[in-house]
Image (tube, rainbow, N blue to C red; front, side, top):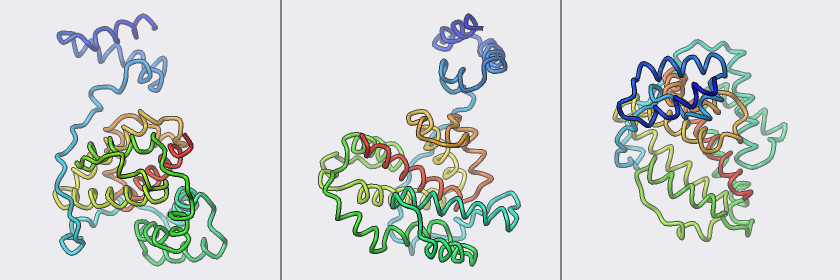
Length: 263
């Protein structure tokens, strides 16, 4: 089977190689060795790739948003108990990645009740990053943003926001200030994409998630986040709906910045 992988790796870069031959050999290798090992050796299956939608100019003014276009609910039925379990996991993960601490019992009960009454996950996130506790985190630490975090931000803005920025703009920030700005700008992009076509929002999310899985695989704790196939992230997004997509973006960006801040 190693011979099959070797042949595949050679033919992948040959323009006239038979696509059917590659597909058959890849399937054989995947059946025997597993998808992860084959992707480690050959990269993501070309059939699973997506084309990045054109990035629109950001809609900065909330009044310009047509929220009817953003009403994208989950496509699968979620029971009350399942939703409660999902909200529970989201809250603990959100606090851990936003504040780097667990919620107090009072905070936990407060936000669980608010979510149960119909509040959005995006709304909970914004409440946390604009409270006094987060403000203290932004200004109390003298540690500046790491070079790895700066480098990621420049590349991320160029590819996923369509804006060129300089690393020097981040020289006087700590990680709490930076990830707040990046998350806000990213959520603006997702809202703007929804105005064009929700399918563009799904594709953007899929490529974003695939990139993070490929480049930072070791920091993700579940199989969905580790998934390198853009098409599989696209299928998840199309079923999950807007608020689950946004909560994944928020968690992933904060988790990544916390990781980069350690370097």
